[in-house]
Amino acid sequence: MRKPLLRATLVALSLCASQFSYAFKDPLDLPAIQAPKAAKALSLNVTSQGSNVLMVGERGIILKRDFAAGDVAQGVKDNEGKLWIQAKVPVSVNLTGVQFVNDSLAFVVGHDGVVLKSTDAGASWTKVFDGNKANEQVVAAAKKKMDDMQSRFDAASPAEQDKMSEALEAATFAFEDAEAGARFGPARPMLDVWFKDENTGWVVGSYGQIFETKDSGATWTLIANRLDNPDFRHYNGLYGDETGLMLISGEAGRVYISNDFGATWTRSDTGYNGHFYGTAVLRNDERQPIVFAYGFGGNVYRLGAGASAWWQLQSPSKESFVQGLTLGKTVLFVDQKGRLVRTDESGTTLKMVSATEGKPVTGMALVNNTLVLSGQNGPRTLALPR
Image 1: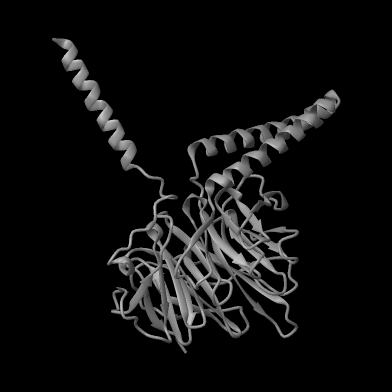
Image 2 (image 1 turned 180 degrees about the vertical axis):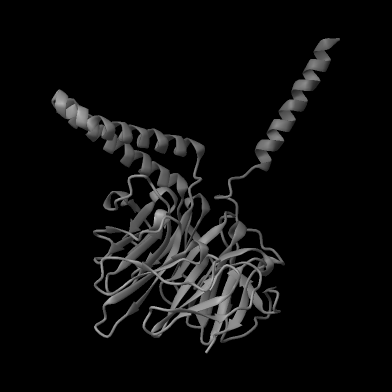
């Protein structure tokens, strides 16, 4: 009497297991759903190229709009009634960073280490890198560092070994941590992207991830060993320009500076111990850079041209700044409540230029005299303050 019951139970469990296995699909392999309310979903970043805007957000949603052309015949409507085109995207992870390289080429980064590429101005996308491939390189680099350290340790005298033991322990821990992270899966997000031209670019992210490509995203190389980040602090933002200047803003108040397109880096400790989410740059009459690092709690720190020390600007906002844009001789910041703060032309004073609050904001781009904001419930626009 028990065998039929046991058999039925096993069949039921088998069916449940097979249905669960069938139902789950890795979001790295699951295309984003074409959703009627995609333009009202959470958006996490935005960029512009001329009149074209790309906005990225949750569950693989990428929106595109040409502000010069106006509304399209068909699209998804935002809360202001504007129509956007939802792009075809091969993943459904949250997307966090976006850059137009030129009028047709664009890149996006996001959770699970994903990097996407578009060659049609953002209408469609292909996956060119992800956290699985990133993990392979992170583990291999950590193992090489541990093995090299072990070899030096084994060849050293007892007195030298005493001095090296802490470093060997740290290298071993880093390798074990990398292996554990890889076993967990592609869980470490990429947070920002910058390309200097159509071939050469970089992506940065959590736990000190930084990868470089020289073939337009076909292959990527881990270059974490170029930066002084032994405790694997997060890299939140990436800036670059045509002069070779690159800036990484990150955790623990750190800004990493390169003046040769990422070949070498210097760590600059600002004296602040919180998160910076980005940097913005002004140039003086001699074209020397004046750097602003902005982030948590309304903090803005300034590094003057040729200076070695940062100093904190007095901020009229205590909310986190999420984006800064260079506008002529000033920088315009937006905080997470949508309020706008601007520097004077000397770059030494901050002034609130719009105190209007709205739903949480995550990013800002400029199209002519219109600011396009990403955030909760999708895109919204503001007139550029005079």
